Amino acid sequence: MMDNNASTTTTTTTTTTTTSGGGGSSSQPKRPYSRRARVLLVGSGRMGQIRAKAIYSNPRFELIGIVDSNVDAAMKLAEMYRTRHFPDITMAVLEMNTTLFGISADRLIDGVIISTPTSTHTSLIHEAASNGLHIFIEKPVDEIANKIRFAYAIAKKHKVQLCCGFQRRFDPSYRALYQQVHTLKAIGTPLSATIFFGDHPVPSRSFLLAGCGNIISDCSAHDIDFIRWILQDEVVSVYATGMSSDEELKEKKVIDNATMVMKFGKAGTVVTLTLSRGATYGYDQRCEIFGTHGLVSITNPSETCTHLANGTGVHSPKLQHSFPQRFELAFVNELDAFADTLLLGTLWPITEKDCVAVQNVCDCALESCESGEVVRIV
Image 1 (spheres, one colour):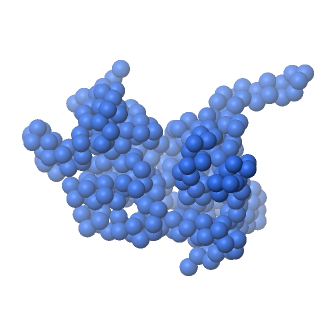
Image 2 (tube, rainbow, N blue to C red):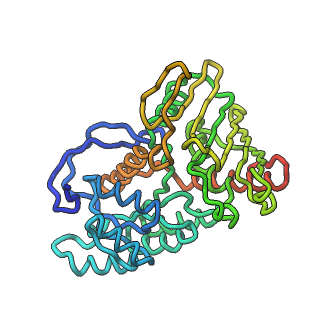
Image 3 (cartoon, rainbow, N blue to C red):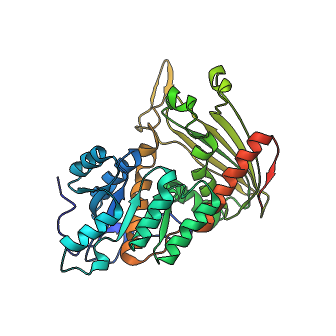
């Protein structure tokens, strides 16, 4: 197996580029680069493992180390990808400054990828920014709008980019949808959209009963971001309602299915977003946008392209298992875009305004779900 943490030579790569559409990717040759981006990965949980594999497989990156308070998990992940474990970001920067020489100190580590629980984000952003590192962070930056603003203020103060990951903008199908709706105006003025988010596998019973995250905050953010981006418009009001799929969940006031109806400002486009924890048949992510001149939609990719027709009917393959499979290429493209930020100085397409707007819609949807009323977004 090739060791991507070996020394670098000048290379030309084919990778993603950020377009004027505000996010996403298109494959085209990039100019030669003389070195790889050196990054730390913070977090060795599920997303950390996904990111570690993608970083190690990408020739534009060198994985300097894994940072996690869970030493055993971090060391195991570090060993898997032939790198080191550090107790924190600052220690990694200090140690690299003393053990690597002949390289300008401000280039020893270029950035950090933070894949940790949301509650840890603000402190980690502050630590990374204070050390002059550009930051990629999983969504959401925070679950409180003012804390999102504070995080971006920290990054601005230290002159580093804060790059929040909304991976649908980097998925080829969602990019194509953007091109059809916004760039080519293929369906005219968008009048309505229907989005379905069916999560798979179904979370464990203990997770649901413990109230570990509400479905609106957990599952709606990616879709709110991408529909704002595609429509190039803002939500002006939202109505949300939800239900529990069985009596035990109802007694615990656990909502595992919800629907949001969002109205946008420019053309009055109405978007219905349905969320479910219980897509027992596979990871189900669909979108349909209807306009004055036509309709465009995204359907689900399957595990294979094989379809069987016989005397018992027409049989289709299973849907993909979960988000790591469905958005595998999006994660690769997203990482390439971060390499552009680190190596070429490209501005990250997802802004503070985007992150705050998504959080405001989530907050208002939760308020609506509790009150039963339409909530206007100021």
